[in-house]
Image (cartoon, rainbow, N blue to C red; front, side, top):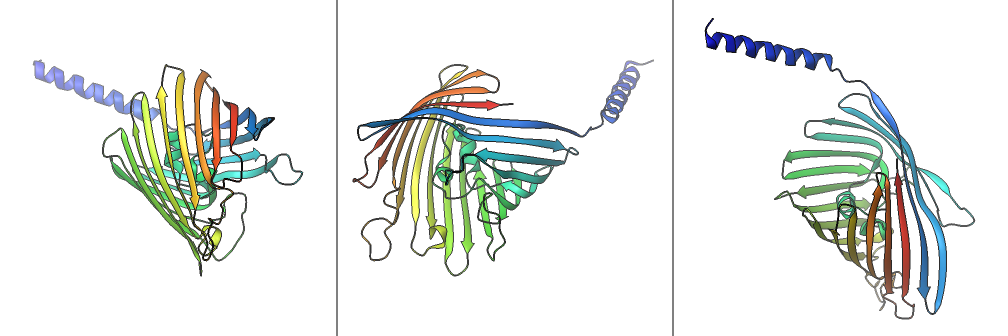
Amino acid sequence: MKKTTVFTVLLLLVAGFAFSQEKTEEFKPNGKPLALIFTNFNTSFSDGESTKSFEITRAYLGYEYNFSPEWYAKLVLDIGDPKAGGLQMTAFLKNAYVQYKKSNLTASFGMISTTQFKVSEKIWGLRYVEKSFQDAYKFNASADLGFNIDYQFADFISADFSIINGEGYKLIQADDFVRPGLGITVNPVKSVTARAFVDTYGKDVKQQSLATFLAYSGIKLMVAAEYNYQKNYNLVEGQDIYGTSFFATYMAGKKIKLYGRFDDLKSKPLAGETNPWQYSKDGQLILAGIEYDAVKGVKISPNMRYWNPADGSIPATTYAYLNFEFKF
């Protein structure tokens, strides 16, 4: 038998074996429970006085299930302190959605995670220490009832379009308004992420948002900046808020991360007024700390924070925090 014939027979046998293996490896539906807990111990210092407290700020409990390679579902309860009245802890339905993913298309429907600050939050990577800018200052909720479609046009560009209820996962009610939003994410090179997002909400008075984000993510160093503007906040004419956030992280070792952040939150004066409409809440945040990745599922972060109010009559506050994340 000629060498070419032997080679052809061997090639066909290998291809047949690979095909038979592929056929036998059938997908099996599977699921798993999930839990994520944020807790901290902190001390605040302001105007010569100090206050200590221990907090469990969030406990996410849920389950995720893969029906097929394309179909996926997730259910998550968010248990936290509402900071209202005598209530200590309350539970909200954070996520309850079905997702379809095939090739470059991903579609989700139900109580979904919103996309307005999803990219910046992921790159910030320290949600258990502090929320990202838009989440912290309530530009939008992190989850809401609605649907989202995400399409990857090429390796370097994707777009997402969503229509949500507009009131967040803590307030689910029927009204005449929905909140459509469109985001574009561009990665001109692997280490650079640029994103712009716009949305609108309301009827006679429209609340409109613009969120822009730019980040460089290297092997050890990450630096990022974002600018956010929201017109007619809470559907009140002239009630505008805006601000910037700059943050950076540096991997000082396999389990050690250094990080810093600066936020500047501002609002505009209403017609006929001198001071901004939320003058008492505007201000600047300086945050710096260390993250220690103790073991898989456990992160510990000592950090310091300084809040400088825009209103000079309100004293500045310094905080010392020890944050923990438990994931399993």
